[in-house]
Image 1: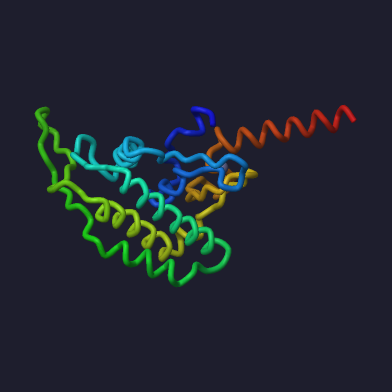
Image 2 (image 1 turned 120 degrees about the vertical axis):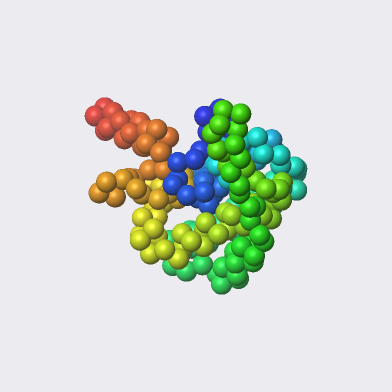
Length: 196
Ligand SMILES: [Zn+2]
């Protein structure tokens, strides 16, 4: 696993898809687990914007396992919906996750006089998973957004993103990662063809 492939990514366009992107290369020989520790999950939670920077959160191994389980659920649902319809039990499970009350935000004035988002109380794991499940429900029930959902064209990449490009012709989850890999492979094929 290279350092770059283990980096957290926030370029799918939705927080529920960003959570799915914390496991990469499921179709390849070396799947990459980017949420491998409580510290990593805490980093993901603040970098994704779900949790305001500086908020106290008690992330532990149990949280990591629950986030990984919800990620697997979202993966099943989103990929099934892209090619047909998700299992109704999975859809019900997603709905149950939404029942937990999400953390209440408030605006707090910092020493510099600027208002910053904070949480009224320390969020729990179920409340944060509820935010992600609600994002998924909103996405799956929004036809214009669904029409822009794309599976990356990269060979062993299963990342899903919202295509917000002009003309809707984005082919890869990331032109730097999968787009670049594809260009290198194409160049190699051309070179081999020219030599034979
Ligand atoms: Zn990709």
